[in-house]
Length: 147
Image 1 (tube, rainbow, N blue to C red):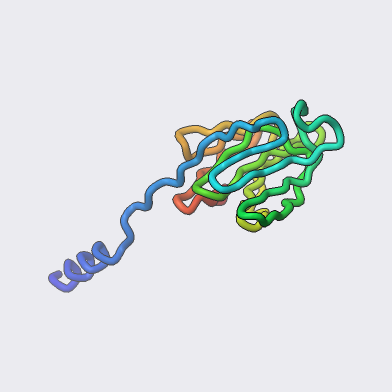
Image 2: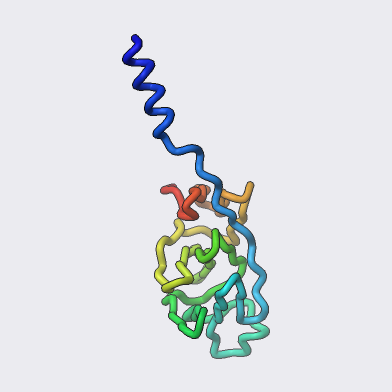
């Protein structure tokens, strides 16, 4: 019994404490641009990008004189920033939408949500609610948990 208590105590000391939640915040676009921290994202459009409600893409992200392109298209609000550099971007095709997680440091698309209709909503600062799809919790590392 003493050995079991010692083992449990050792595990408690080595187990990581509950990680702080990832801060997820809505981002307001200014026409075809999003500005967050050191990053600026520009959404390309053939029409008037400043007055569009959707942009054809790609999404061009720049910081420190360097830029990259995320190959996503038909981009529409809402936008969300998770942590310092993870950008959740909504796209649509026909009546179906997808939310992508893009790492702003290199434009890699890290994740795509299940298909849904309508707009995603952020609940409690760490759960995306999708119409017609299961909710997705954002983990402390700002990545989505598997739905």
